[in-house]
Amino acid sequence: MHGNAGEDPTEGPHSEPYPWPAVSHEPRLQQISDDLAKGGYRPFHAPCGIMLNEADRPRSVCVRCATCDGYPCLVHAKADADVIAVRPLLGRPNVTLLTGAEVTRLETDDSGRTVTGVVVSRDGNREVYRGDIVAVSAGAANSAKILLSSATDKHPNGLANGSDQVGRNYMFHNCKAVAALSKERNDTVFQKTPGINDFYFAAKDYEYPMGNIQMVGKSNAEAMRGEQPQLTWFASEWGLDDCAKHSVDFWLTTEDLPVPEHRVTTDKDGNVHLTVTMTNNQEADRLYGELKKVLNHTGMAAHHVFRKNFYMDMAIPLAGCAHQAGTCRFGTDPATSVLDTDCKAHELDNLYVVGTSFFPSIGAVNPALTAIANALRVGDHIRQRMA
Image (cartoon, rainbow, N blue to C red; front, top):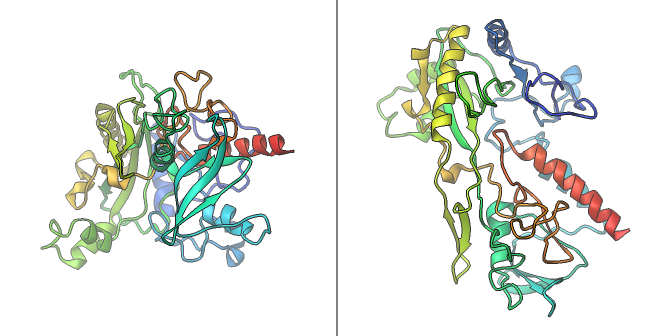
């Protein structure tokens, strides 16, 4: 993980610095960052999980390419769960990874306090796996689905759902992608390095938080045409390519609020149904307005900032959700939460739910680091319990 601790004005306390220095800005982005600082803003190097060694580039796994954000990494240089957590463990004798396997329900003993079996559908067959401790980490939607599909006489509304909170408070960020066109070319390759959190909390003229501004992967002609083929039907390839070369691309994130009626439910066939309405639309619009003011300091006037539905959708739809959270919130009161503060189900003795399901709120930044930190914390707790 790369970053410079202390740069972000909103960051909390930390016990030690990031293990790797922040990923450097390329020249155009360094110019923008310097201009923002001169304008009174506080830009920072966004934390970045890539296996990049800028001090020794020939030996670096990451090659700092243009197809990082939103693309699979062909050299396995993203510091994601697959590369840095799962793959290194596969050779160990006590680790087995099953593929093509779907957990359909959890079985419990007669008391309803202990999970006794994990029922799996695999290659058309029913299989049951057993363990002293069971951890569910299937994402906000599917973790809720597993618990809701595991109803018994002792848990008629779904496993661990005496509070009626399983599936509720589903959250995903209110995000917008924005392209700012400049007379200057933007030859940046790896664009996702600067961030701005000056509007993360309430501002002088507005009492509510607006969110985070950061960069997104560099625009290119192929992506423009692929996202909106009808709108770009009459655009020449060279025209789109020239537009992309002058584009500076931003990602705006506003917090989605936990609302009990925003929920995951399942039908009798086990299909997932999601009921959700976007929250904080006014705050998201104000954040977009603040971005246009910010760019006045960078030589990109407000009338050169385009919503990305100029050639692709600006508001990221529900199907594009990458930051889902909630549905199994943790807390100290079993009446209002599913899990205790160790992410163990209040109503069961050996069931844990991790991932992002435990989030009681989501903030306005990528939840990955919080999910990772909590998984390590819960893992230490389980290890101590099994000692």
